[in-house]
Image (tube, rainbow, N blue to C red; front, side):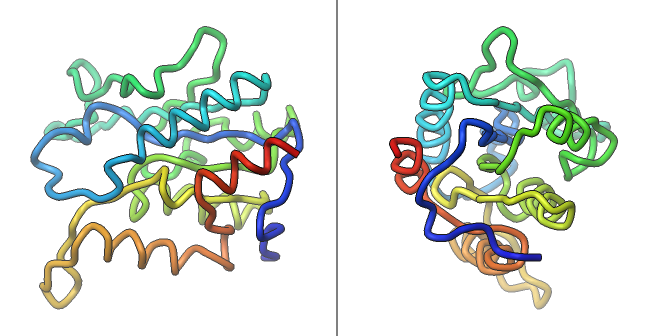
Length: 195
């Protein structure tokens, strides 16, 4: 899979902002320690820039089927975070698995409307963002993952050692960059919109 143009220099009007699972569910203390406390603000800055230019936006909403999930419909955690609330007319893709492409019409919509490249933000960089970015790359979409507009949580590695959220996040970025996407920052993307 070829790497998208990097460093990011300009974005066409068809560039699509894909916001993944940015719901109140992840504010529940059961998730543990997280990183990138500014991620939602950065995602909101990108969303505002996309709206200002009338560029395509897709909000991915996780409706968990797990009975104990904080993402389960019918509870406050299922609601979108205030920084990235969808506007009327913006597309909402509802998913039930980690990848936004599984069991949804996301790929069909992106191809039908020629919405690409993809700019991906959200949670978590080691789970749903990871799964979606991998699949996007494998499907042939030029994909950019915004490192400071995504976040994750501390996690035990396979040997049982607790890894900080920053360690988990940075390893996810390292695994994805160059193979499935180009990893960029919010300022890279905003500067690319100016040109």
